[in-house]
Length: 117
Image (tube, rainbow, N blue to C red):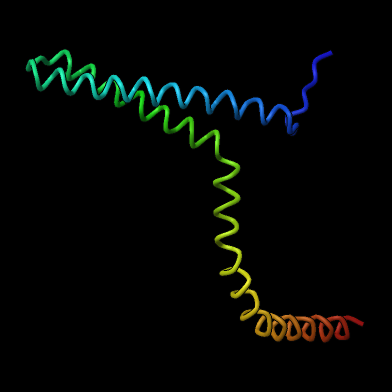
């Protein structure tokens, strides 16, 4: 029987490793194509080599996206950690105001319930 569990750490690590390898390969191949294409295009003034360089640039772009995808969990964790102090400070400053508002709402509900009886 096939295991259909998606939230599995082992599967995540395996997928992350594959995506990162693909990204690294695309970055390396694209970088070589880009450099080689531009050098040859400027040295020999051939449009075909310029197109080769542009294709290399596309490989670099896809490789970069794959690397970002492979490190998505780490990037998300970093972003969350960088926002936590700001969110905490905001909650600490808003808590007194929210408490007063909640007290007023509760008072209104209590009066409404008394009117119904």
